[in-house]
Image (tube, rainbow, N blue to C red):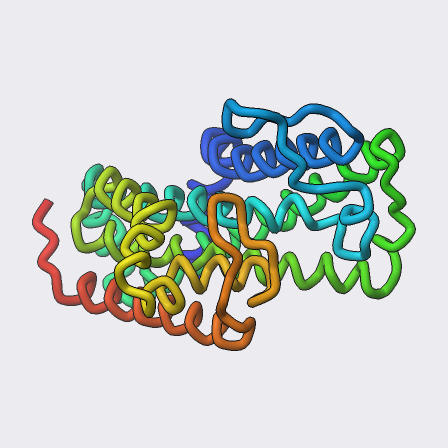
Amino acid sequence: MRAFRSEWVKLSRRNTLLGFGGAMVGFAVLFTILAFVNAGGGSVDLDGGESEDFVNAAMLSLPEGSVFAITSVGGFLGIIALALFASNLAGEFNKGTIRMLFVTEPNRLKLLAGKIAALISFVAVGVAATLAATVGVGALLAPGAGVETAAWWTSDGLAAIGSAYVNLTAAALVPALIAATIAVITRSAAIAISVGAAWFILGEMLLGTFWDSLAEWGPAAATNALAVGGAGGAGTMGGAAPVIAYGAAALLALGYCILSVAISATVLVRRDVTS
């Protein structure tokens, strides 16, 4: 708990709250506005070509319509969490503060557990704030877009909000913990962020064109499927519609997270820290 509390001292700083927390909320709110403008008949141009109809009022009026926008950008929430974990872990090595932490807490596993628990809780709070902001903005914009929000507040609608929170939080932790492992191994935030982001944004999709199993069972595929609730979902923005069932995606995500933490712990315990 000492490691957990000390980590939150860093996470509660203004730059971190606005940089990472603000980015999560801001991006999701922006996409929510675009979705409702599009549903209301506005012109939305996402790629420099003609305007696109990626959502309509009928879709947003469904019980799960309140979380359409945030689930569509679930992959980007994971990239922000990835940057947070990578910069935090690698920063301890770059600044030399890791030695001070080991002196204060000689048990390296306890230190790592406290840091990861604090980072996970930060992401969980960030996703909750993002979800609340997008639902709130959507409710304000709904009348002008011709969207009926009555179904949002039914039992099905509230269940959709709860499911979206759990799925998005879990999905964000997959790239985050993988990036943390890369950061611990390389001691470089730049490498961890660039390699991790490249893999989850484009790398796995490109390699999947030659290796079908990777496209179905890789970490990015599992993250995408988990974020939207498994096969049958529309897919996150920038990702194809998932082909993995929800249960399989959840087990894969859990496996990738456990493997990442195990590798990070092994490297941290065995590595000599001299600077």
